Amino acid sequence: MSPQEQQRPLDVLILAAGLGTRMKSQKAKVLHELGGRPLIAHVTRKAHALDHRKIYVVVGHQAADVKAAVRREFGSDANAAAFVTQKQQRGTGDAVMSAGEALKDSNSTLLVLSGDVPLVRVETLQKFVDYHRASGAACSILSVKLENPTGYGRMVRDASEGFARIVEQKDATPEERLIREINSGIYCFETAKLFSALSEVKPANQQGEYYLTDVPAILATGGEKIAIYLHQDAREVSGINTCADLAEFENLLRRGTIRGLMMEGVTFIDPSHAYVSAEAQIGHDCVIYPDVLIEGDTVVGDGCVIRSGSRITNSKIGTNVVIKDHCVIVDSEVDSNCTVGPFAHLRMNTRLEEGSAIGNFVEVKKSRVGRGSKSMHLTYLGDATIGEQTNIGAGTITCNYDGKNKHETIIEDNVKIGSDTLLVAPVTVGSGSMTAAGSVVTKDVPPDSLVAGVPAVVKKKLKNRDK
Ligand code: UD1
Ligand code: CA
Image 1 (cartoon, rainbow, N blue to C red):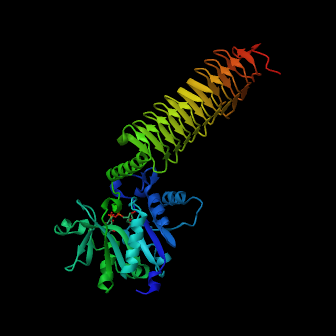
Image 2: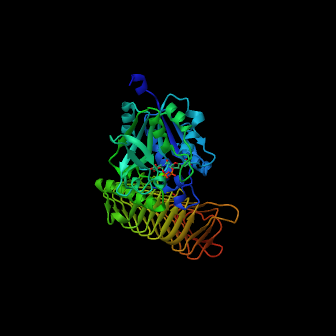
Image 3: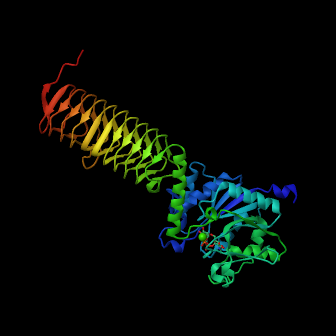
């Protein structure tokens, strides 16, 4: 092969227009999530990591959502992928054909991937592309051998073990169904040759579809070379077709993530019952109890203990934090040496500062709790800013919503909010003050004052702090 041929740029085409009937779902298959991200996002991320020119994604079913999922994966890099639309889902060959306009005259090598094969590794794809470029073939097919090849297209080899054709499960004879070597659905093509052969594909098969898998045999008949790359790790390139496959992959991915964390010094009391996203980070000497979920980009610092039944999503946890049983922490920050729970709920940019504590049945929304402050029982803190060393008594409620708008509550340093206090926002409780049990605070409380009653009025000055 000439050096020019070896240097053809690589384009990537990802097929993602199908509904995925075997999922028995309203949702397009490639939108189902694995490790908290849609399948299509996994595949596009792998493609993007290759040395490539352009990524094309074929969309059809729920095209808008599939496009959105791809765009989310690439963030601000809006040009990272282009989309082509397959109007009717008439098979994988037809799906590739729908990219004809964009690609057919292109002097490139085309890597074809399926949106439902999420675990394939970048190194495997790179090796496969290198193999194809060195082979001088018009098409290379990545195959694997499976114990149970049911459902896949089988690789039929000729007398000299070379490529003969691919036969789909539904079209295969009983003998062909015994073949264990299957087509992974990952191919490299010389782009122009692919599109000239595609025009010869006919839907003359059991499913009445245009099969991409007919293209290699058409090329071979025309005298082109077809190469087969037999890959050893079958798991990595197997596709997701059913919810059972999805659960199996989830389990595989999760076990890999948790094994990696254990190697980095995280203790899991029962690794088979912990759920940690691949993006999350967990520090050394953390102890994670059974049935904990750590989702999204959560970061947990060193030495934390997370007890059973807690879920932490897209949050930042400092060092030596204790999260007791059954807490929900979403989009929030918990600084070092805090304790949370049991049964606490932190959400919407809540921030617990160093050494503060939130206890039993306390919900904290979009609030800041200052250093060393505590709210231990049966409380709602919403849109509140709480100073340092303040204690919020049991049953306190910030009444932040007047039926139309949300209002803020400010509770300054060294305050003691008595049990069952209602703080009708907007309202400020000055530093050093105290509310008596059962107070309904409707007006700002000056510093160092004791208020009581409904509505609460100042009963006495606590001490003279003016110096
Ligand atoms: C396909 C292969 C089969 C291979 C298997 C590997 C064909 C005919 N068969 O079968 O040989 O063993 O993959 O996983 O290619 N798609 C479209 N438009 C369509 C149809 C499908 O975009 O009209 C997309 C799907 O969204 C999916 C991919 O192509 O991402 C594969 O389609 P699927 O129906 O899953 O093919 P298989 O039956 O698994
Ligand atoms: Ca498939």
